[in-house]
Length: 175
Image (cartoon, rainbow, N blue to C red; front, side, top):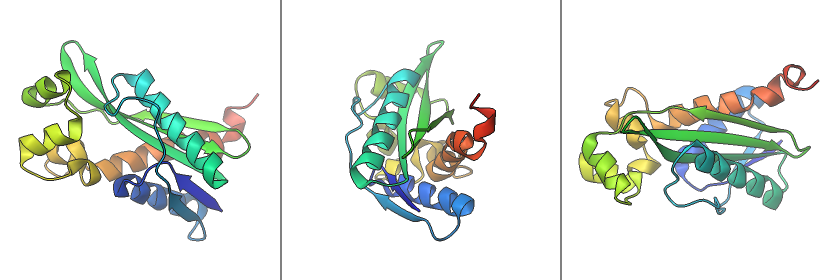
């Protein structure tokens, strides 16, 4: 079986490989491809972020002709005056079945919230806060803000596992 991730970000590729190997076995081939999300570089809101994940999954599956296309998109939410991370995952099967899941939100520190409200992308804003480099391709905001207790890859593994629910238990979804 071949799966293709709509990103070259090593965190997204590693999360996909880890989950799909647990679910489908070591014989699965996971490839990555750079595709356009079709949303702004820093998506805001669940709708825009989910759209980016769906666009990535569909493009990856279509371009590579894989059995599964996987798309992840990280974004931001503003709730009650606070800014949180949000993330979505979409899985597209070549037969047209689509699975989706979202979550893994963490409250951003006030200085980071101010930066992203002013137009900064989350990754560089987190780099500025922590003094780290390229956090979005490593532990992410989740890793930095939980002092390493969780990280971006773990969060994306959870999301992909949840997005696979429709493919793993189709009888619960199809009538």
